[in-house]
Image (cartoon, rainbow, N blue to C red; front, side):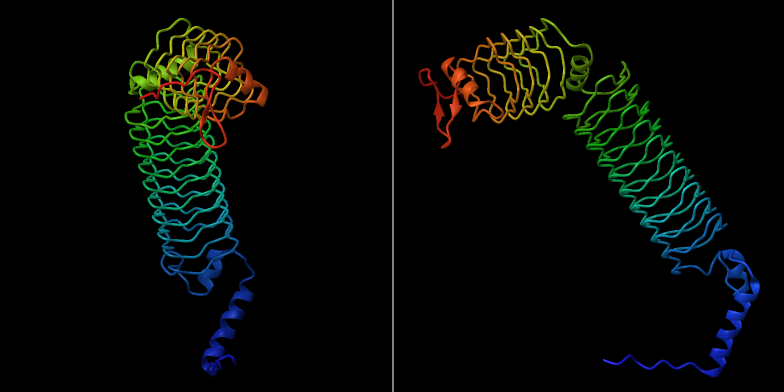
Length: 391
């Protein structure tokens, strides 16, 4: 199919030539100066403009209206965009390192993969914005509005987020190590698998936040509100909580166990499901009938512990020390027992499922000692007499 004909009047062509001559005679590559030559007002004439891949280093666009503009891949390093309107603008892959965006409106803007390291975004409105995989290390986001924003996989190392609003934002897999989140609002925020190592969460509101598998090592959680927060498999090693930290009794206990350990402690019937207790010292502890479903006890010392009738199903028990432990009647179905030490452990009527991580020789030895395994057809096999069904 042939292209449609394009006609231009002599007057329009002459006007175009005049503009070209004006640009050439300007002898400058400064965007603002060129815009002035062309009669463009950067403050109001750039709505919806295509500025993709444009070099705008150190440009002054403060208070400019760039709503819906395409700035993808543009170089805006050290640019002044304070109080600029960038609502629904496309800034994906843009370079904004050291840029000033304080007070800017970036509602529903796309900043995926953008570089904002060291940028100033204090008081900026970024609600509903997409910042997935963006680089914001050392950025100033104090009092910024990031409600419902997407920051999955974003680099926020050492970022300043004091009093920032992050309600219901998505920070899955985000790196917030060393970030300052003092008094930040994180109600219902998705922080699953986030790196919060050494972060300042003093007085932060994390009510109902998703912190599953989050790395909270050395995080400051003093006076933080963690009510209804999901801390399953979160690493609380060396984190700081105090009397004023609002946290459930379950997770306060987990914090004590991972950081202080316990010996001869009575934890019978305790709910430790989903707890991260890797490397915990639980020597001779009484954990009979305890709920340890899906807990991480890898490398934990449970030597001599009483785990009779406990639920350890789906738990990570790799390299766990169970020597002399009482596992009679315990449920270890689907647990990972790779390199676990079960020497001299009492395993009578202990249910191992298919024995994930166990060598065949170990299974034979455990079966000889009264353990119960499921064969390939799902039927139970044991050298002991049949065990009545458990309810």
